[in-house]
Amino acid sequence: MTAENLRTIKQTAESCKAFTEPALRKQIFNAAENGLEKCLIRLGRRIYIDKAAFDAWLEERRASN
Image 1 (tube, rainbow, N blue to C red):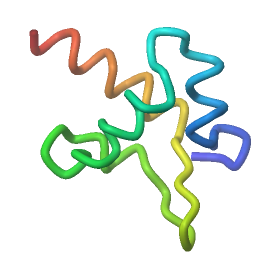
Image 2: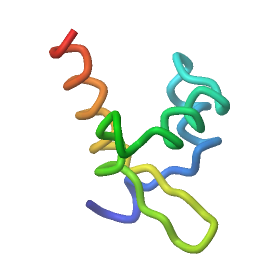
Image 3: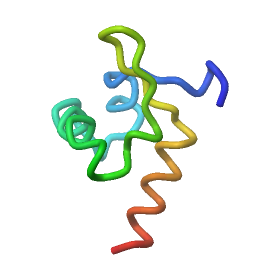
Image 4: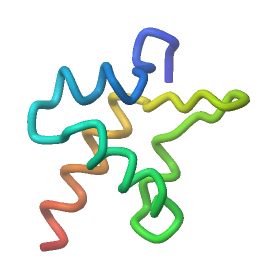
C-alpha cells in the first residue's frame, strides 16, 4: 500500500460511479461484516480507502456471488 493509493470516500465515489457517497458510507458502517475493513485506514475521524484493496474487494464480491 502506498499513499498514492489512498482515497477519501468522496474521491472513491467520484472515481467509481457505481457507488454514491451514502452507499459507500453504508458499506463502511458494515465493514466488519462485509470484509471491507481490510481496505480502510482510519486516522482520527477521517477514513481513507486503499484503492487497490477496494478493487480486490469488489472482485472478491463478484466471485462469491
